Length: 178
Length: 109
Image 1 (cartoon, one colour):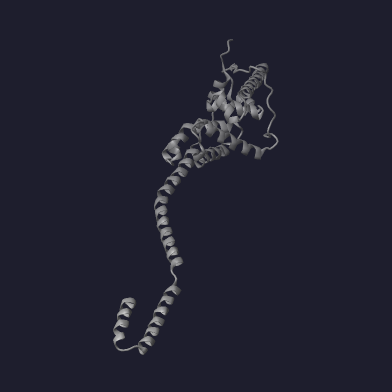
Image 2: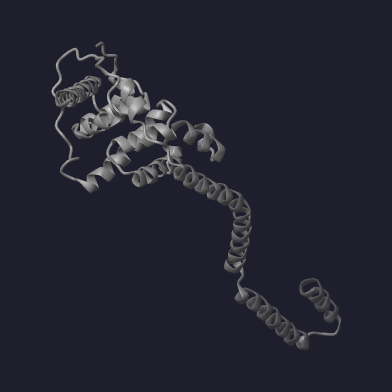
């Protein structure tokens, strides 16, 4: 990042190569179209370049860029559907919330998964997208989302359960109709 | 029939990743090429601008300090002094002329 800050374009391109796939997938899974996804990834990267002198090395670089990505995505989604993406109240947290492994049948079809993912509440799909596509830790996700660690764990756990229930329901319907 | 169960995060990543669009790379590298080219062009512009600015600054300082009236006043005083001296010479005896001219030569030269 020091090289990027000094205006080194090659270093900036290297950073782009490292992040482009995960950024694109995260943004698309927040509910934007392919064309908007292309524009947003560019916007995020060039905004990061423009603001490069504001980056401080005590923060992790990827966390900083993911924060820009999240903010830009939310701005776009709010313009499109202000009611759906308005600030939501804090998710109810039980004390000692911990990471949960949720298992589903790996034979599940893509279409079913996509449909169930789309039906999730925005804050659930956002948290789960960050977890799946950015591969950040829960602590880093908490920093990006500006939420407590417990809130993030709770959001992701609820997202996984909701997704699993939807998938099982769809699979059950499919099996029942056979 | 046994089911193969896997972690939902892994399955999501495997099955729902979008194909990466080539257009994104094309657009991105087109913009970084422009950035590189702008960087290369801006260096001569910077030193030429500095040179031009220094010239304008020097010119402004000279113009601010230059006072034509001052030169005119000095010349005018010299002429008056010379006229006064000529009037004085007219009243003096012959041997005092040399003294006066000596004085004139040392001041007027």
